[in-house]
Image 1: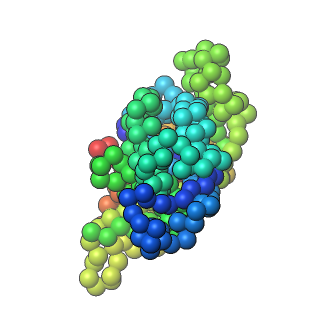
Image 2: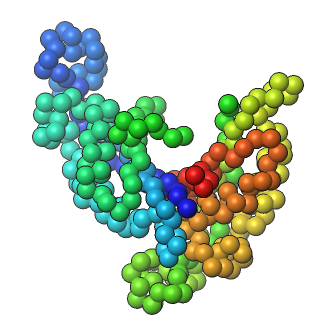
Image 3: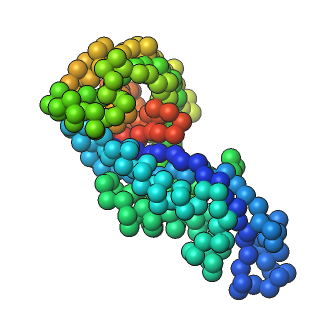
Length: 140
Length: 136
């Protein structure tokens, strides 16, 4: 029987929203405070949802030790306590949480093979959250 | 279609063990969760039902009835219990969060009047939950 398993991870990072494709005034108009040249930070709450048949021998969709290990190595080690703008993927792309969602989804989709990746959700603050399912409809 | 979610909490203990595995396999697969004396969690259960709004009452489901079914079928059986030893489903199945969500679904399905069960979500901790949508 198929079940969906969601695990939440916390990480903290700084970023600055600024696009080289726009003028100084446009950047300020669109990004407001988030355009502050010195950046600012968030405590991000990352939720990873995977799905698959529940293995009768273990009762699990996938072993949490494997999922946690992968996310720690490939995602948290990369972003926790970092400035997102300094990472190669956000040297040209604006590190909005939309783009971060897509980036993390792709890291998981390409590297984690032990269950089907359903979606990535990131809470940027208690009031904002973003979800990406690789273009698929998100099941509620 | 309107969706309605009712939340409940229960506290229970469990451990993970497959009698077909060797002690080494059990320890390797389940780690600390293999401790036969068990350990516990405060589980949060969210039951989502769906249906059309009944024009006379304005309800999708009678919440009182939903609450009673959840109490009778799930909480009375699982709250303050050792799941492996006291809940029949887990005499053979390992009481992982996945299997608890499936067991809750099976206990509720068919007991609800009018509204259809959409999703059972079980939080083992605030950082881990499982969703079950039935056998689709």
